[in-house]
Length: 412
Image (cartoon, one colour):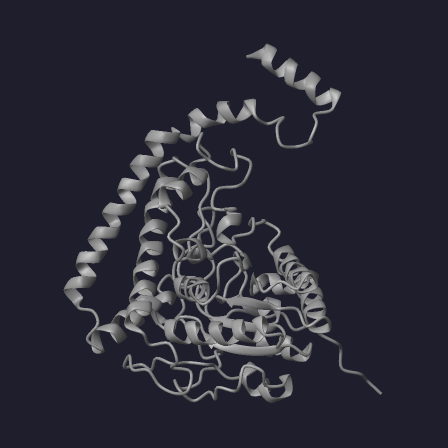
């Protein structure tokens, strides 16, 4: 009997450069349709939420359904202003990279709502283990942007002394664990930190971040297993922005099922959320934080969003996706959606939006001038950092490093 030859399925994106954008593969759900269970509901009762999509803001900018729990105008205005600052900061620093003032930059463009909202729902002392696009963790806590710029310039005021790639920040006091280029590692380390907090009987929780592409790494599944087995107090964030550096999310397994389903399959509470809906981001983050902080266990959240810009300053997305795809993304722009809601509710106006936009652009420009005046340029700083390359490696420098340091000084 003749047998049919075996064949592999190789995922392909629904659109390429020069073809119309196609988001028909997204599993969407109307705003307000998803139920809001008790934060301590058993995992089996939450299974539908790993396949649906939690949304609060509808297409007309109105809040709908049981997840519309965080509508305080002051809270939402802080979120809007933080997101606007992130986007203005990104634009200025990306331009600075093109001017060769820094070597590398990664934007949060299009994804500003997720990390901003979650940080606003956490407490001081909680620790976050970020991926590349969580600038909102720092700016939602009013981090001085001139300090961030010094790290980007790798200048003499860079707290990391030029040893870390620009945009890979590290700020322990703000609960921002060092970013690593090996992205999936931070998912697992965050679970370990949460387990340690529970072992000590502390009250602090952890939040780990990963992108859709990095979920294909083994650390992702290991993190889920440890979180589930030990009921770790951690929020596991999967930012599904549709693209890794140049690879569509289906390559990591996002076509046949949702990324949230992987959490459910491991026995972890799992929710799939509109990541461009700031109200949904607040409500779901608060729900997951309450579950973790009161020994309800971990929650995996798949945030459905879109990487509007290039993966980094080294990437050209026009080579692998339609140029106008961001304009066709069905979940829209997080800043525009929140602005529309606030205006409709009478808490904001178009003129205030324009005025504040001009204010933050000047704020970012002033911070850039300050960073360049106090820390110098990247070129000036490299020589200064070279003097410190033997420091902070060992508690006491071994003889061979002392010898090399002396040889280095003699060459100057």
